[in-house]
Image 1 (spheres, one colour):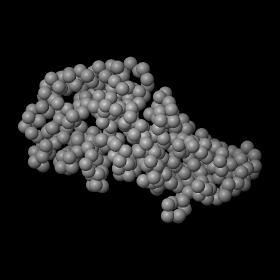
Image 2 (image 1 turned 60 degrees about the horizontal axis):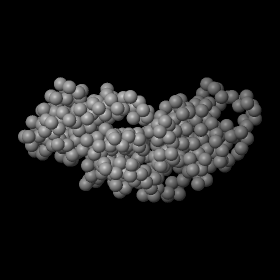
Image 3 (image 1 turned 180 degrees about the horizontal axis):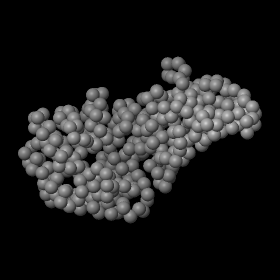
Image 4 (image 1 turned 90 degrees about the vertical axis):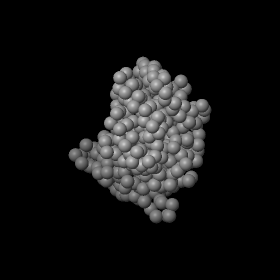
Length: 386
């Protein structure tokens, strides 16, 4: 497209085009890598910035057995949108959370400690329904999850008693890798050993889980011994490689789902020695043309990519000239004069020679997860291949 235009034909300042056909293809690719396991499509953080409800529906259409969110509010929003008939798990709880609402919405809730088990048991009793509970063990990541040993024994013991009363159903046992995106890291084997030990203890105590799971996107792609009964695929669903060490998206058979573009807002000639943007960290080396791109850090364009962020304008890679501002940044067009309204592509799959989210991650010194997740609500999502 020569212009950034909505499907209605109205020109847009910027847009994030979400290719749902690519998402469905990624889900099918990931399912094929773990043929003996169910697949969870993680749609937390508004589906990594892509739009939770449309992406959740597309993932289920492509064969995802489960959906996953971080917060219960995210999971409840999926149910409120009419996404039923699929299991939804949420795992990031704080005291006083919406436990009863989660029980009544038939969510699978994660429990990492005794305080959470007590709250979900109380909620289940108040609702008069059995809560679906998954017990999370900390096998070495050091974040959420119950510690092995006495803490795990206490949590499992109380959960088994609550299950015997009919208050809860222990549907899963799970954990999360710390370094699965670093092939051969010694923590991977160590965590698998601890996970198997925690599983064995729980099963000896009488737990009969529906699913046991530890594999995230990188483990789904590279560690078949970690697939167990369920794999949790997050960033890979959106066609992004979990780590350059694992290969590019294309190497992994994945296609990036989001293309971020904007309409060039101004093209003008300036003399040499002309300062550009705040602080004049860029000064034109000679007479040139500048193009104004009307997105900035308020839209999620990382300020850390000032002077380094790549953009495709007029078929050529340009680089952010000077600082990224709140609403806009400038590129040096080197004398070229594309029409105002021409498309500037910040990132996409790379098919047309445009940068990718990974290119922006390298420019900003971060990871591609952050690049797509941070794209703000001022940028409309336009869904294609729905």
